[in-house]
Image (spheres, rainbow, N blue to C red):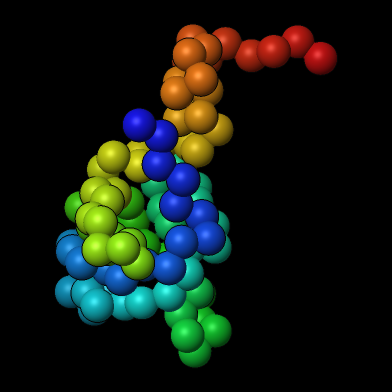
Length: 89
């Protein structure tokens, strides 16, 4: 199942950085190894995917390790295309 996390309101349920535990906000950016969360105080905080867990608004937990890699690669894999294969322009 493909997980789309950008735009989701989340709470950091687990992190290797104790200072990030309990952080709440909206996911505004995803890179290969990190997520950027905009807090209610309009501060952007970068969270490493590895070793993190996010609680979504409905109570579902998503492991950061399951989000590793680039979003576009996860989309391509879920659409059934071979990883690393590019469309010609």
